[in-house]
Image 1 (tube, rainbow, N blue to C red):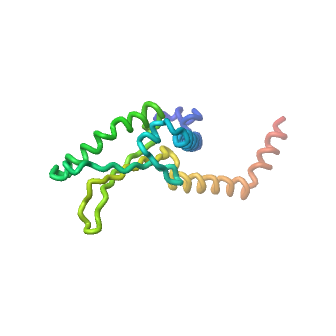
Image 2: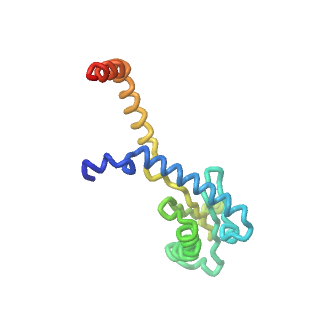
Image 3: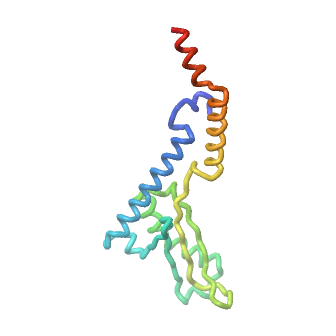
Length: 163
């Protein structure tokens, strides 16, 4: 990134974090709207959500798929999710904001079953614990320097004396 790019507000970290939160609020609103509509594809796919608005779905393969190797079973599950992925991407418009987790259930004996859990989580592009700590440290140091060295009264007196 060129040095002059930092002077554009759209490249500032705080603006990117604000956009992350805007996208998350839009995600929440969209999921609530889709969930309340009985004719939506959200309900057609029998999707559910957690309190943190992670969308999940359980997919079970047929008994005829038992002899298949594990890799082929996973490929079948992923191929069956293509319409769902298109729905989340093209119709709802959240492809770049979602991560997909893929887990297989085990029975009580510890052997894998034919059921898989697919979880779609909203991901923040800029906001993270690291960003928050960095933001707090930089602002704390900046405020300490401003108040400790009394820079505001110094700046005001300098401006008033130059007039």
